[in-house]
Amino acid sequence: MYLARVIGTAVCTIKYEGLGGYRLLIVEPLDDAGEPCGDPHVAVDVTQAGPGDHVFCVGSREAALACEPTFVPVDAAIVGIVDEVHCP
Image (tube, rainbow, N blue to C red; front, side):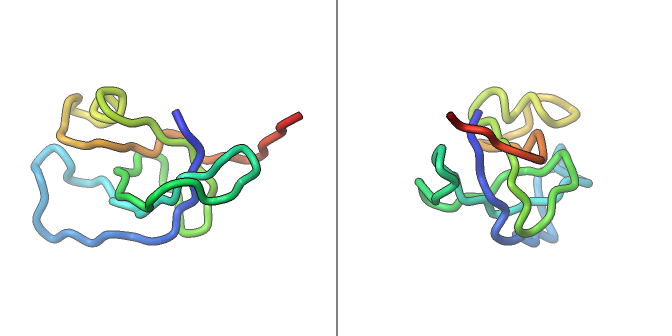
């Protein structure tokens, strides 16, 4: 699981059948200080997040499990919208 910020959207008129109804958002991974720490990538959104939202994502097998039906071909999924982060 990792924190990220939504920085854009990806519009696809044709996509895998199991992704119907899901939006694809471009996310930028964040470190503990909230600074970008990786390359932006596309994540399937199961939460209705929007541009500028801080989110938490899962990758690999867990991302494929986040969608219904499970095991759709995705590498990243947004599974929560972050309200606050507290790091000591």
